[in-house]
Length: 425
Image 1 (cartoon, one colour):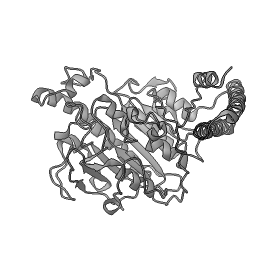
Image 2 (image 1 turned 180 degrees about the vertical axis):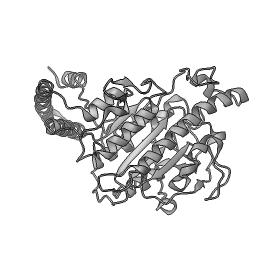
Image 3 (image 1 turned 90 degrees about the vertical axis):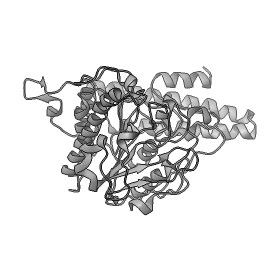
């Protein structure tokens, strides 16, 4: 079997390795996590939010909460809203939703797929070393990309998420898991041997590529060892009241989207509180589903292409106000729930709400709907930035501030030109 065939096989069993391009992989930054912020959560509606109802007219602390965000009024002191943040160079279309956390498009990085590495997955490498799950990717329509430039799947089933977090596997399943991990490790050994034999026949440029390929293999090995190390560690205990009621196991909520949104948020709080993970992304799907709410007559996608027609905007506002209300409830629970150190989860968690889609009606990637809450930041204001032609302030400037607030001394990420420390810290 050749090396390329082995790579295909590894992909088939759930291990992904992408051949790096010429530039070396970034060197991990040192971690010195401050007491105020230890975790990161991103919530992303795939189609964004209607700009006319999302952005305040006034700047500073005395802004009037816009109509779509009225449910967030109780949290205005814990929240910051931004106008005119976007990713320079990213074009329009549905694909822009995939760029939220990395600021680049797939078509622009064919020579260096590592540039697709998203903020959450970078943070997972730094903040996830001591947790069972480096990151949790929940919901649908996620924008998480691995270091190798592979888009990562999400899980939108609350019952499966609960089981994954809190139900221990039986001995038979654990034995099978060990066997699979051992087989994966053996395959990687063969791949490494094949790759090294190639080394003597390669030119300098290709040797650089091969070295980066071997670096990717080492990354997969680390993940396999990590999984093996957690097999016999008991999962934290949590009541399944979040998805069921009493001993008769009657469902207390409809576990189908969108009614499961509150359940997913509750699971996220539990995951953070039990130190099961420090990084979570939760995506609200796009598509043309019919939301089962009073007053909705068209599919979601159809409503986002409203063309400013009042009747369609009214229906779209029902959906987007629901998103805001659920997010508000999530912030409330974070604020009321202590972490393992007795600190409010909201104070110790940077929570970002946003989308790579700025105006779904026009498939625009400009002026993204971005809010940040918690994390020990200085909040309470709406900030608006000047636009330079079609581009606003790079959203990656905010990412650098988030990284530094989480104790990662990094001053460059994606397309940033600076940071927003002067506004938030």
